[in-house]
Image (cartoon, rainbow, N blue to C red; front, side, top):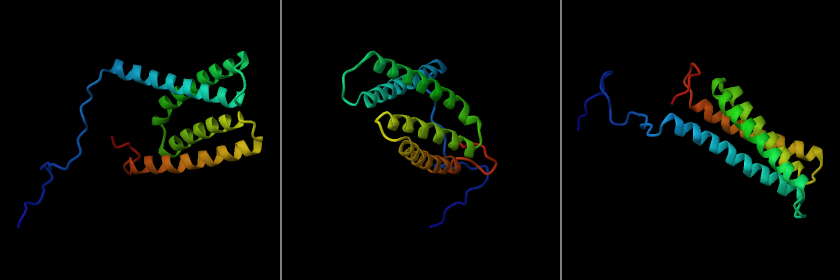
Length: 148
């Protein structure tokens, strides 16, 4: 059975098209802030729970949780705004460093030794870097522009 060869001006049905954006810019901004605050609160609760190790909840424990949540949310928001403007290597490295530091801090709150916390953080950061670099490498063209 013969088929017509595609020509440069002809559009095929398998061509990728972007899905329409049905939400307003205001909704996207609200979703970004909600995500950052939610992740920060989960992280802060997790840090405080690791720190108290099943003991009673104290004022210092609450302070640690809220400060951890605020710092995590602020760093997440800053990296989320800054990272897309970087090349894929730095983009992946920035998120990997963030994930490694965040995990290392949580792990250190369990009472583990400093060297073990640093080692675990480096393992997590390495895994994040490899995964994110692969993702960004496969989602960019040869000139380094992101394919969206």
